[in-house]
Length: 114
Length: 115
Image (cartoon, rainbow over all chains, first blue to last red; front, side):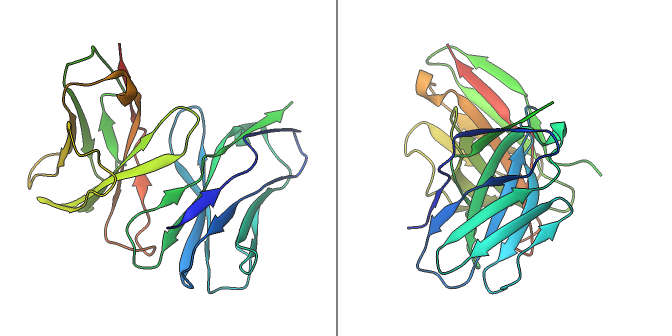
């Protein structure tokens, strides 16, 4: 069975700093996809970034980038120049290729301090 | 182009009552997923439906929980005889197909509180 582990329950950083959120996963699959979702206090689930396992290049979306280490089964999220609006829960998630279920980690609560 | 609509946003039920949670998928989406989020936890898959069919209910409790997605109208997640442990946020997501080329779009969730 696939599992997703986020070892940092909560983090705080000053505005404009860079922060890295950790995620590890366990799977025997070779093809899969990884995601980071953001959940602000409004509870909406917002897709931040996604990574295909077969791609070696790390995905980037503006201030958000990932460090994907397939052999280590690690998928960390880096937020550069953090902003107050980045305050949210962040969930790492996994989906097998062709599978329907996304598996979520327990989340990291990120506070951006003014 | 409305997103995934869930209602009610908040629902309070006494123990033993029934809870009905509604989800209208995005226009053109025929795949609906329900997830449950317990406090300080990630989302846990419950059930996946296509129009009039349950495709995967492996995450659904065997008793008291049921889901439907009729040909017309929203998808309904029904919880009978609610207990305090059912208190959670329930999220609906929809997609136009399966797999990662059809990303999930989430609603804002229904927070169920059982008193």
